[in-house]
Image 1: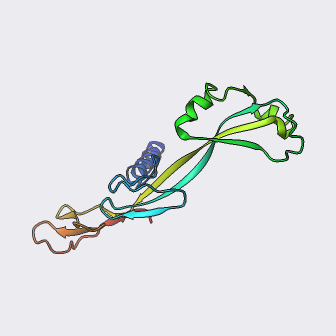
Image 2: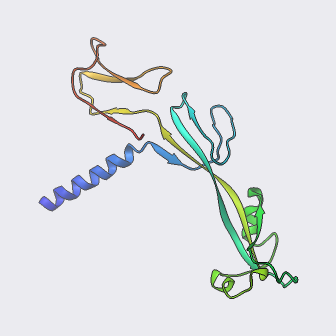
Length: 173
């Protein structure tokens, strides 16, 4: 019986943590509210949506190819081709810039002048809420989001005065 109780407590704490997660990643580096486009290293706050966001750019390997020796004997650095993100899928599937795709193991056995790597640059958006959300609010009280601000006020339902009962706030800072 104690084992079931422990499992129930662990699962409920995990679910509580997931349901109150206030950050997310993904999408393009565009503020959907304003239409502003952001680039690598930019960060911004949107007070209408109460989000604090940042943009980073990642280089993703599409494929690695062996090429014929073009008398580049003195090449000591990797040869790289950066592909527009609109073409990334067709390049990765070897439908564009067709080549002999090779594994990392094979790359290590070839001279650098015989290897070319194709990459694309991808935006990565991450946002966290600026709101701290009231939890465990007593039934006599209600949590109201303050219009035009990124905060809640917890008040007595009948009087509108500050809530006299204890409650918690959940958020990520």
